[in-house]
Length: 472
Ligand SMILES: Cc1ncc(COP(=O)(O)O)c(C=O)c1O
Image (cartoon, rainbow, N blue to C red; front, side, top):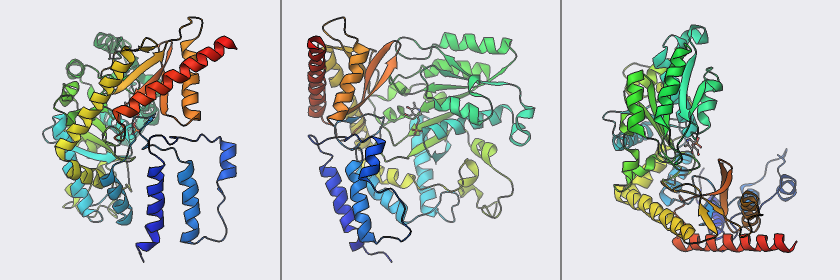
C-alpha cells in the first residue's frame, strides 16, 4: 500500500524548492491570475493520472509558490521552516485521524492535553482547559462564544430572542476577527466598540472605562473585553493588568488575543510583555506565528475548566461520544469543531527537539534582529521609524530628500519593485495618515546579513525611484 520509493521524487522536489528558497534567489515571481492559468493546467481530468505524472503538477505548484521560507520573506506574521514540524505534518497525514474522541486519537489527545497544560502554565493559568483550533480568528470567536454563554446561558437553546443587546470591547488596533465573531454570533459587528489607542498603539484604559459607562447608560450590556498581545501592525501589548481590574469590577469576560505575541512567554527576557495576561479568562496563542509551526497550529486556553463544554456541548451526540466515563478524555464536546486535524503532534515534536531552551533562544534571537533593524533605521537619515518598536514589528518609512515627493506613494512603489524583482516580501500598512513598511521578524531562516541586504536594496530602489521622478 505504501512504498517509500513512490515519494522519493517528491522529497527531491521539496529539496529543490528549498534550494530555490535561499538568499539571492527570488522570494516571489509574481503571477497575475491570467498568466497563472496559462502556466498551470488547472482543469480536472475525466481520466486519472499516474503518481509519476502528478510529479509535474507538483513541480508547477512549487515553481510558482511564494517562498515563505526564504530569508527575505517578511510579509506575514509567519514564515520559515521547521524540520520536526514537517515530520509531524507528514505523520499527522499518514496516521490520519480526528481529534474529537480519545478512542480514535489516543496519543494525539494525550499530546494535546500535555501542550494545553504546558502553555497554560506559561500563561500563568493553574489548571487550564484548552483546545487547538483552526487559527487565532477561530480562537477569538470561540472565546467570545464562551463569554456570551457565561453572560446569558439561555441563549444557547433559545437564541437571540432571550438576549439583551450585548457589547464587546476591543482596541481600535485589535484584529478584525472580533468584528467577524460578533457578526457570526448574532451580536452584530457594530456591537464591538473600539477603544482608542495611545501613540504606541496600546488600549487607553480610561477610554475603556468611559465607554463601558456609556454602554450602561444606554441600557445595553457589556460582556466581553479583549486585549491584544502583539497587535497585527505595530506589535503593541495592551496594559493587561489594568484591563483585568476593570473587567473584574465590571464583570466582563477578559480575553487576551496573543495569536501573534503570546510566544514571548518562552523567553525569560521578554515574557514581561505578557504581565497581567495571567488574569485573563482566556488566551489565544498561535504556534504557527512566532514559533514557526506550519499553518494551522493555534490554541485557545481557558482558565476555568468546564467553560468550553458548557458553551459548546451538544445534544444527540451519543453516536459519537458513547459513554460518560470516556467524556473527560474526549475533546470533541468542548469545541465548535467536529472533525479536526492533529495539529498538536508537530508542535510537540518541535518542542521535544528544541526544548524550552531552544524556544527561548529563538525568541531572543528575533528580538535581537528586530533591535538591529531598528538601529539600521535610526542610523539612516533617509529612514524613519514611524512608531516606537515594542516587539518584532518595525514600522518605518523612507523619507524622500525632496519634500515634494509623497513618502506614502514612494513606500508603495518601493514595495512593488522589491516584489517584482523577487528581492524581498515585506508588507505595508496604514498608521494614521502614513503608509509604512511593516517589517516583521519571525522567520527562522533570516540572518542579520539578510536584513542588512534588505535595507540596502530598499534604499537603492527608493533613491533610484526618486531620481527617476526628478528627471521624469
Ligand atoms: C493579533 C492577531 N490576532 C488574530 C489573528 C488571526 O490569526 P489566524 O490567522 O491564526 O486566524 C492575527 C493574524 O495575523 C493577529 O495578528
